[in-house]
Image 1: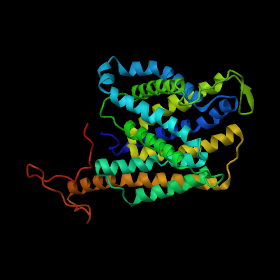
Image 2: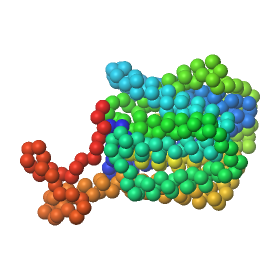
Image 3: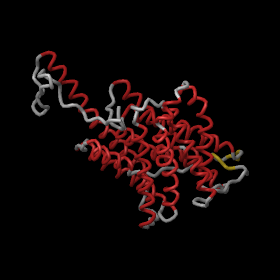
Length: 353
């Protein structure tokens, strides 16, 4: 399967959806957990660096086991892992930090979560997969849902520079799904995640040392879910849940679903974030946010239907050919192969390399 090109089938699709939801829920915990650190004096860059740095250490032993001495896989994909760490992890975080300096948080998040739209555009321009009507409907529903969930109309601040930073974060988010979906390299998901987190950690440390982002932290107790706890409790939860579990399961989901479906299922992160904030911080979601969540889910289902339709049609055509039933009009006749024998329907475009 090339980058983002596979179409899910059977149990792989079901497993992929569950992994994508686990990843979205895990990422959705980051806001509530990080808020306790930020209120205790931590800077966003310090919280993120601790989060992904500890996660890299936690995943490293399992990654080494899954690699099973096949170091040539890591060496051969060093550029992929480096790009993943620089763009999809560190770059996405740094650009978001710069965006919220001049934009309201809601607007910054809305622009960042245009990443799935960029995935659709990438698949169209790079692989010739033109978006069909169900995908376009899914995009419209998902964006409308994001507007409602993020409440972007409250305290809107718009700045051209900030918008460009947020769009850069969207590129990083799109890169996360496109690069994660490439299983043609043979690189295990845990190795991909760990390598990317190591690269991202080193990048953020360097960025902090040269002053690109402020790095401030505190060892004072923090308030989490209404209770005073040591600072390392939210750091551990951020690292284990919102980084290690989130990135590893996200890569596994993208490889089973393809980058497009995985990216749209990933939008449920904002829904999980609102629900988790309700449970942990007591921030009750308003009805308009719940309505937005419904629209996001509807958008995901529309995109998922669009991806599943060609697979079902191909399966139906194959069955008709076996039993001698003609395919319905519009699905296309069988075409001769190079040897002159009847072939199947035109294959789905696949990436090479």
